[in-house]
Figure (cartoon, rainbow, N blue to C red):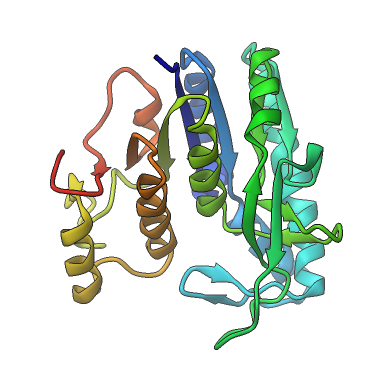
Length: 263
């Protein structure tokens, strides 16, 4: 029987909250068993872009990345945020290692082809090196992965952090029974954006398309749900979406994603 691996992804609102982030990382440090942390940081990148006079451009929750924006993203994701998270985990006694997709070649991607939209230097993942990541874990190092991938030509590429988490969880399934946990500032997927307690506790394939048609799932939630189902199709055992309580023993109400009608 394979051991359970938790792949936990945190978003920009958690990272930017100076009170919440240290508490979350302290709880993450206490999680037993193998684990990987994936972080975003879009809010911080947008703030830096605006300071430099570059207006962020997002389409359906995904960032258009030109050459100038790529430089800002690499500095923010792989530098400032990644090292801050690693240092706080070290403070909590977790020997962690900060990684981009370029480090040890863990995430190979191709530049997204131009179709209706030119996303610029955005990467679509082709391979996650699960063997290398397992070596880190076997050596008691917790991978902390930022959303930067790399092409075969050595070009750094911006890649959605939800996608990184989904593909990492799917790739690690060969070695572990993987669980994918998306953590953000809400309790889960909300039926009404104006009602913090309108959490949809279970979403399956059928209800997902119904929610899409009604416009309940929109903006930044679109890639998160798509990646949730992509992970389940690739045999990830469980996908949860909720707040920081998902890494504690007292879990709050949250959303569970399943491929079929089973809860």
